Image (cartoon, rainbow, N blue to C red; front, side, top):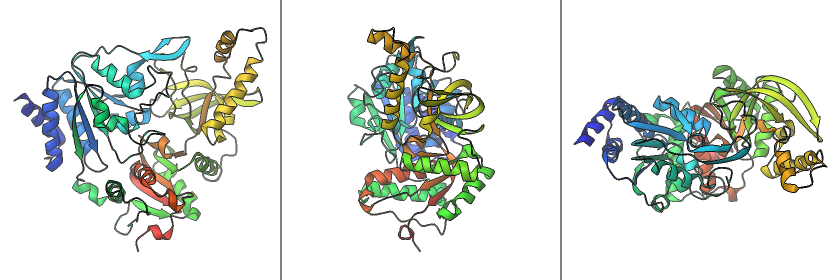
Length: 469
């Protein structure tokens, strides 16, 4: 059978003999690849340390060697970068692949045509894919709906979804719809599901993966009403850290692996702002509001400043940008703005854009929305001659100040913002955690935070009773 040949190729690319679940998975993937079912889909769930990444990267290399077409996708730029680095092939964001802008003057995006034929679309970090109609700028506003419609509109195309159900689901959702077989079947898909649960031997030597596995075992058993216990003595890749030692530890990380490979993960925007302020003033010794080299995270999609750059579809919420040059500052409409040249860490393009400085310390989206409404009203006052509301709105939407980039510093972020990314060193902030907030959601939060790290985790200000002697 041809599926046996594909299985053999995957095993050759694997590098060593797969055993147990990994071997079973390779057989099932091989049969799936060769199936002629036009509505086939494969859902691969795999927890941290189970070897999902190894199997998928071997699969991509094997299919490439057999000239079987694949397209690699992920929900965010950072997740696409991680997928590309472990597979060895280019990866794109879902939005970039499946949508196109209606016109230069229209900020809305519509589903584009799938011109691929006989192509396997591999989508990583599927736990992050939402299906709530909040993104009305894009297609139907429901990302999972649009992804499936796009893929299966192509002749002979199919979908392989990869994800981890122990991670946080999309914001304000209790489950990840793209990882639910029932949800996928509602689209008329014939779904084959495989769940990798066995932790590979090498992973057992990692404190990060040991504790991640412990957390997801508690999730599976629904024993998440008491705090987890950390066992640090036999591991070197997970450490406890007091607030007193924090500045030195972050400085060492910046010197050792670099600012771009270090992140602080918090449970709230307020805590992230506090860390960002402290890191800039006490670790980086930066007194200015903004400095060359500062890392900024975009907090709202922007469709304005990318216009002169055909390779950039839009500047996405969650993109991390480095300040390359600081230009002219403005005080307009009772707010502060500055022109910057920015470099994308995930895609390596440079762009000139105006940034709204007042948003740097914003603690929640509601506050930014309130400021946006104030700015809209102020800008609208510039056009007293326009009395038709529709024309006035269009005029404001063309204004450079109203379209300024909304950003925060990116040294410390909430876990949802970190999801999909990986850093060599991750500092996890305990923050304020009442006993009644130790629950399933918290266990998912901690699991997601832990698994952002590839080399080292630091647990900041965790109480004594969370640790075994």
